[in-house]
Length: 320
Image 1 (tube, rainbow, N blue to C red):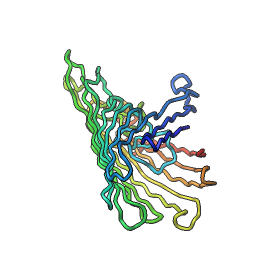
Image 2: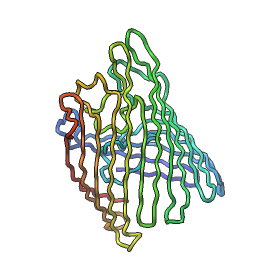
Image 3: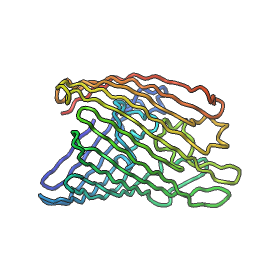
Image 4: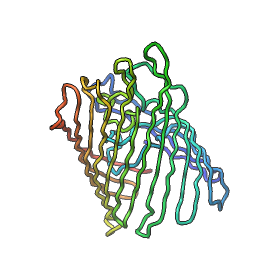
C-alpha cells in the first residue's frame, strides 16, 4: 500500500509505501506477516511557474539510480539481472531541463549502497556511496517519447584482511533505452559491475560475494546483466483495456576461481510473460508466468544443464 502527498503550491511531493511480506517456508527468517516500510521520501522542487529548468531535492528512502523499470507484474520478487526490491536511504539533487524536443533530468545522489557490496572478509563503509544518473526523453514522432538513461554508482569500503584495513572500490555502470512505437514498446537495459554483486542478484542465498580471499589476495567478483522486454497495449490500438508483455533478463558472474567449491550461481536468467486487464480506471487484474533458470558452481555445477523453477502470479490492484 502507498500514500502519495502533493502540495503544488509549495512544490512539495512525497510518498510513503509499505507491504506485508509473507509466504516463505521459514516463518522466523522470512518475516511472514510483518509490515515493511519500502519507500518513504519527500521531494522539493525549486521553481516558479513558467521555468524551463527546475532544481529539485529528494530526502528519504527510494530506489537507487541503477534501478530500471520492467514490464513484469512480479514486483515483490527479483527477476534475474534486475533490481526491483532494494530501496536505500539517500539524498539526491537534480535539475529538470525542458529543451523542447528533449527533456533531461540529471541528478546526483549520496546514498547508503553498502548493501550491494557483500564480502567474505570483514568490511565497513568508509564513506557514503555516490550515484549519478542522466535520464533523457525525446520525441520520435512514433507516439509516446522515447526514454534513454545512463547511470554510474560507486562505493568505497574498508576490507580487513592480512591484519590490515584496505580501501577497496565497488562500482556499476549501465544504460538503457525504451522505444514506444504507437501501441508497441521495446525496452533494453544493460550494465557491468565490479564487486557489486548485490545488484541484480536473484537471491542473497546463491549470489556470490563481492569480495573474497584467494590465498592472501583479495579478489573482486564481476557481474554483467541485461534485460530485453516488449509490451503491446491494445487500449492504444483498439480501445481494448488489455495489455500483454514479455521479456528475458539474465546476470552472469565472473572471476569466481576459488569459489567453485561453493554452491553459488554463475548465471541466472528469467523468462516471463503476462496479461493485464483494466477493469475500471481504478481496478486492474494481471496474470503472469515466470520461468527461472540457474547455473551453479560447486556441487550443483552442471555446465550443460540448468536448474529450473516455475512461478505463476495473480495480481490485483486498486487505486484510490
